[in-house]
Length: 464
Image 1: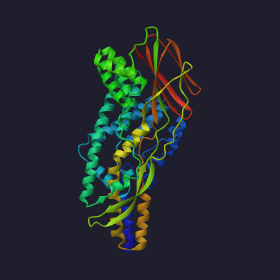
Image 2: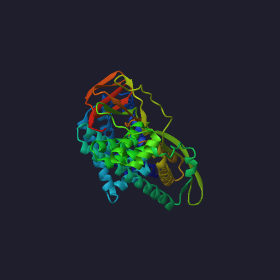
Image 3: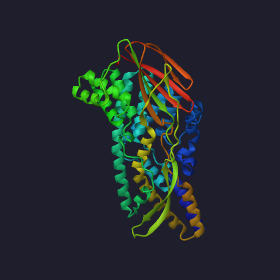
Image 4: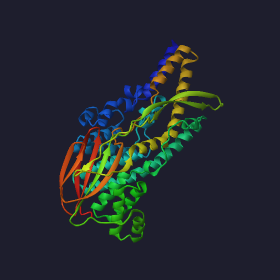
């Protein structure tokens, strides 16, 4: 009888430790991507209304749940609801970042996730996700004709990404110290050698979409120095993107940056302004949906303080085979646009996971060790009891696949000089029309998923 009581206490104890905001049967026995597959598939197919019906409720906490809501509302053209959801996510991020010390509740949550799985821990968004959070807040401001508000969000996006990167470095250092304090040494190399690694490229770290949009909005606001800084940063990320190249040359010439302009023109050709009787259309086009994290089983060799080797199976997040999505060329006034890649969101997501993987493996090692200690202490060599606890541990060992599922897969850009008057943008069989005066530039924003698309435009004024 006492053995059964001990076993029950092990299971009950782990449940008590998980009494947090993220506690649910879904998070105990499943993972984020699996729970939100209906939402993911609806967005991927361009079924925005169906996606809204499938939005998560209290699955991953205020930060991630509201990111998903804000994005889906944006695609469903519910701009007030989108802005409100993104603001709630932003408030939750600020509250998380402003805490000087870890609260008792956070400590209990962390212990609970260590006893069960990482899905029960507080979600800390990746730096690229924070960048997109403010980018989409900025787009909501722009849609509402608030250029100043949009620029503020662009500025904040760059700031939070830098801060998030610094915090991740501290997180890995802290996790390593925690591991060493328990006398444990995981063979991380054996895991990483089998793990797909996103190449360490600038494009996987810096968001060219964000930098270009920021530069363009600064230019529209006649803040040319700020604009040129971001055009140069965007050019470093995407050196072959025609829209970025044109913007950098255009602003360098207006600022009289003769040395910079000479270098740019030597590589890319002469800078030119649009003629007074012409106009310009810039198209930013989001395509598809980012890959969803999947679960991945891996054997982890773990040495204890006595150098005894044991092999444990751990559940890790993993990006599987990439499913490339193809889209027909967008047309402007019946002419196919030559678009250039501006941001590969999949590369950013994969690189972020690769950066976090050592800390994830260390935490997994701590968990399997802690679970095994609980099993041995509770069952006391009782084979049936040990098997029952092992089943519980296996069922609750779920990979942490939390990520912003509804982001686009990639972002492209294109630009064309046009005759003033009525402009027609065609995406698939969908036409979008607007008027454009001579000497003016218009930004057209497009987001395409499946056979559907959302399109709107804004006049940026006299960007020559």
